[in-house]
Figure 1 (cartoon, rainbow, N blue to C red):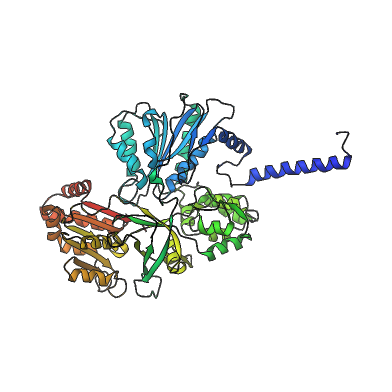
Figure 2: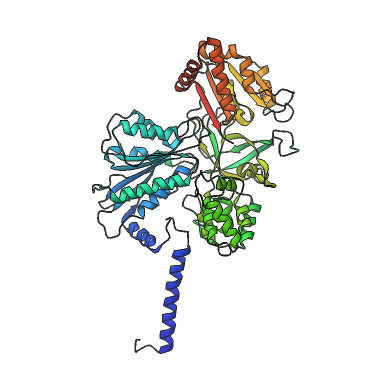
Length: 636
């Protein structure tokens, strides 16, 4: 004990120091607020050390900062291409895991770089040693919008990449016909260019984290044992004019100026409820082409947020950091209620939430129930778990499993980001470049005898009022475009809200003096209830701009769908496609409608030409390749 301090003061100092040390350990061990997955002290020290060896470059509005290195090292490239944000989430997690390998006392340390494919022009694959690609497939088997430049450049590249070691994680949805096509294409092309696949590439059906984590485990093991040369990093990403506008990371606050109910007032959950919305984007300099979509960031239902807070007995005023992937602008911190309303998905349940609850539930029965649900792992192959989480929302799980010690940071770490939703734009910029229209099918249903609702659709219908603003941006769809020659005949097939982009197409053709023939096959349940844009379409038909064919599936004893009308008009369809080089477009449900329409087109081509089904199928593939058969479809 130091002789110049009285005993009482020394005891007070020692107690205070121990208390501070104890608090620091508690925060590091319990908090999940770090951007690194591992909140251990080692990870914290690694984070501090690696920060000192990085020079922060310009932040281009990405959801994660871009870095460059000012010392020699072993560079690793993590490239991602994303449309809805999941590829970015996966790539960021991989980046964090690789960063955690960095040794503070190693002068030739690993230097991971996380790069959005939209910045591909700064990347020189011929100078890369090790590259991990995470990329999704959008729409009808096409690359994400921001990844199109990278994809096209890679497909047309001649220079060999014999120095490159790589692995590809292809994300997709098996409900679509071109499952994981983009990722498979990237892998095949890298192999053709003499790249070496060092980790088995994986195809991921939706969000199967078991397989994703296994792929990452293999990568970490490989990095720890592989030999990489030491170099100065050449990669330096700088801002350009293309990054100054509004996009998914920095949306424009558009004012809702029109909102109309286009269907009869619903009397039951089975009735269709569709609204037409118009947003004023004056001053945004946003531009679009007919066929593009409007991305809209929603907010969660405040009542559902309150249910989460009340279940856990939490105050909504406690302040936390805004997550790094949140759209701009934001203040950097927000109270818990704001975070749950604007940035986190409280509708979808991740298995991580059940895993966290395992350690905090107060009931032995509940712990056994959680153990049973998780006993086969957290992947898609665990049917009981998948059935459980698909039928529930976050508030349901928290109400079912009573937690006595779950912390806000723990919950937030188990939630998905609240992603924007995308709606085909139903207006042409040639008619009014300052007003963007969408038509939205409002989702309401019951599950487990509880009322459920779509996040964005009810946000627009029930909570956004006229004159109020919400965050929007344009999502390009380069694979859904009218022919460059306006005289080319087009066949438009779009039941329900699939009519949206075709309304824009029709407006555009209507403004052209030499607009070609347009044939619209539209479908709905009842003529008097859910016939969208009825007056407009029938006016276009009367004026001779449009040949209109409508299928009302439930207005008669026998259900009639758009594919039935196509079959009735099979001679016309064949004439337009084969003899007049027409284009055909399909928009709407991918699970049933698009498949049925595709089969009908195959049958029409087969029967009219007396050819085999293979010949008809090959002809449709030829039309796809020539951009004469385009689809904008989604799974509901």
